[in-house]
Amino acid sequence: MAYHKADAKAMLDDRGYAGKLIRGQNPATLLERAVLDRITDSMYFKEQCFGLNAATLCDRAADLQHIGGTYGTTGKPTPFLCLIFKMLQLVPNDDVILEMLNQPALALRDAEEDEDETTETDQSKLGYFKYLRALAAFYIRLAWQPKDIYQTLEPLLADHRKLKRRARENYSLTYMDQFIDDLLTKDRVCATSLWKMPTRVALEDLGELEPYESALGDELDEIDRESQNGHDDGEVFGNGEDRRDRESSSGRPVGSPQSDRSDGSVRG
Image 1 (spheres, rainbow, N blue to C red):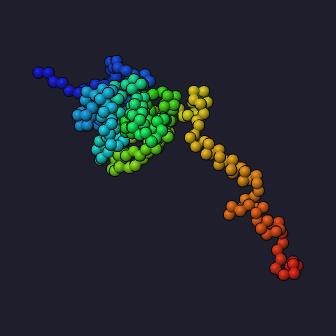
Image 2 (tube, rainbow, N blue to C red):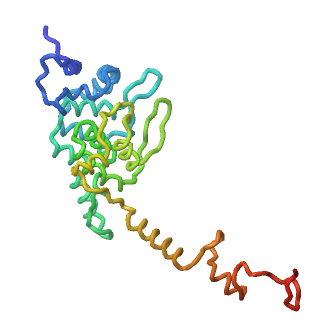
């Protein structure tokens, strides 16, 4: 009698592996082996991730309630981490990942339903399912090339929606832009050691990326101009009072000898 079962651990053996590669290596090895063993042994992965493809995986990701790595005293993997491993098994096309990241059709539908607001949609507003976006961003950080990672994830720094993060013992609140910044700057996120990625400055020096333009660039320039104008107009005291204002109010230059007599003589 034949038995059929999900053989997820077969992918972890590099001997004779002939599937898709990511940067020349088995995608499953991008996660730590201890975490992989917990994922393949978890009930969520066996029940909810069996037989998923790129389309049905989006349905599972749309039901996510939090991000995170492992939790509890035994280090159980979160559904977020289980779906990441499933994506590494499937290795979806880049176009599929971008659709998961932005979901433009849903964003346009919401804009059409709301007639009072503008129908323009920018990169930060796309992505109706925020945990699906977080899942796609995490996969991009694991699987894509450095140049593509920066160019794709940096626009998401304008997304300030709240995210629930599950830690080992409790839940905490974070934001999408903070999560994206962690992916771009940290080497370990959601109990996963990320591969060492070149810094943005290094890629700029190599000519692969243009200099980064902050969304607050115009405001910072305006603050610098106001500060420069304040120094040019005159000396500013600690309480914010201008030197010339103090001189005009007292009728004499600051620092001149003061008189304590009504006849104007100065004490010697």
